[in-house]
Amino acid sequence: MRAAPARETAGAGANGIRLGMTAHPLHHLDDATVSVSGDGRPVGVIDIGSNSVRFVVFAGLTRAPVQLFNEKSACALGAGLQTSGVLNPAGRECAVTAVGRFVRLARAMGVGRLELLATAAVRDARDGPALVAELKERFDVDVNVLSGDDEGRLAALGVLLGTPDADGVVADLGGGSLELVEIDGGQVDPLGRLRSFPLGVLRLDDIERTGGEAAVDAAIKAELAKAPWIAERPVKTLYAVGGSWRAMAKLCMMQENHPLQVLDKYTLSRGKALELSDLVARIGRRSLDKISGVSRRRLVVLPHAARLLAALLATIRPERVVFSIHGMREGFYYTLMPEAIRDRDPIVDMCEAVAGNGHRFAQQPAVLMRFLDPLFPDETEKQHRQRFAACMLGDLYWDEHPDFRGQQAFFKTLRLPVVGFDHEDRAALALMVLYRYQSYDEIHDAQDVLALLAPDDRVRVQAVGCGLRLAHVISGGAPGILGNCRLILEPKRLVLRIPGEDPAFDVGAFDKRLERLARLLGRDPAIEVA
Image (cartoon, rainbow, N blue to C red; front, side, top):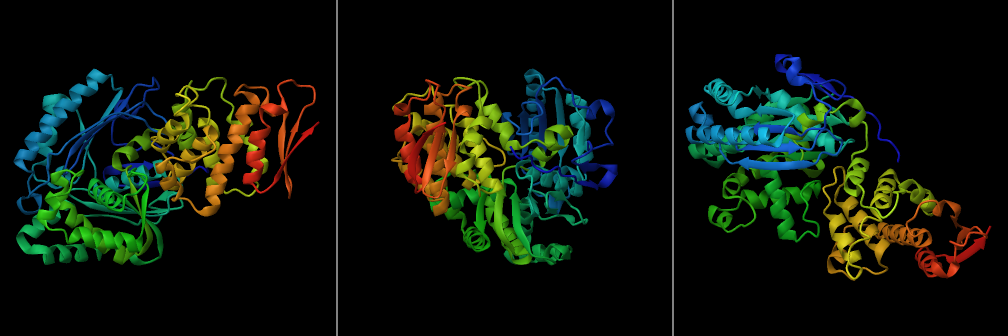
């Protein structure tokens, strides 16, 4: 597998906090708190946000994090903060209860490291320090209250966790604040282009209650004007982070009947994103009540999120919007990784974890890659990674019922929790694995997913799948056989060169598979004995 280039990012925030990919962050903490044990125990993060308190448990430190547990409590801690200056009393009580439950669960789960991170509501409220002190006294835990800059950097690192080559602006929208951070070639905030704004959806809701929609628009315009750098240069991608924007993406996917109902890296052009923003901003409360699949609390503030997104699209003018499920929590987790883990390819790590010991025999992705290499001399780096993932997962579903093996392989692969894959990647990988098990795609959902790919890519994924099927038929999936033969792509022929003295290479066992692959590539099949 071609290794991803190492990236380095660093930036100093308030209180001496330094966030980077080459050094551990949050140096203001004592060494006993910062150190990461190497015993593989779970890592837990309790995010005390303005809108909700969420507890996530990760299965140790890996490049492709696996969540063991994820629960939130919608406390609305920051509701009313804009006008009162203090935490929502009911929300505070809810937050204390939630933190108590999560700390108790963490200890029962054997979490090796537990971090409590508080954001805008606790940071800005007059009684924020009192809440921190109460949590310490009641549950014996320390709460790290992040500055706005640190919150933004962590959100950007969360995006990098899933998209190592991210380039553009990360916009992290919470209940109490909005953070904008520039990412340039995988580096966070290289030119000091980072800012936190008091534009969270709960704050905007408070502003609307007192001044109406015009006051909301005025507040957004006035705050964004304080960061002129966001309009200084063309930006390819706006990475939208936060539950409100994910809810908007979910509504769009439902409305368009998108064939892949996976939120991470769902992508819209600027024009489509503006249409979505305009639609959501104009939705009345009665219409909101009729929407299913999104929580009532979230629906109420969606028009504010839509107005804010529209303002960013008009100011930053990105080519596209990419919705990310990775944000501040994942960014903090990312800072804990040793450099050797960060440098690994997240897709390779995830595929290895998914495959585990599920193959029939010894896994041999490198042998499969070499066998298929002659068929794809001009593939891009992205296509190379897709093919490598298919070689890793292509024999994983051997124990499914033979009548449904292809179908099961397709659906399971399509919905894998793979970090680093966009929707096109997921579609390509699922179809490659489908064609590895069967020669037809008479699955309604497969036809819909195929439409996500360009015409040339549709032929390529079929060729990869058919090539994998040929490889596994020749070798029976066993090691030590496939390396003795090779494919040769000629202008008019696809040649399979096999050894003459090896009884494993019975032509009658695989000639039909070779013929199908050759026809797919516009060649005549040929077998040559070395």
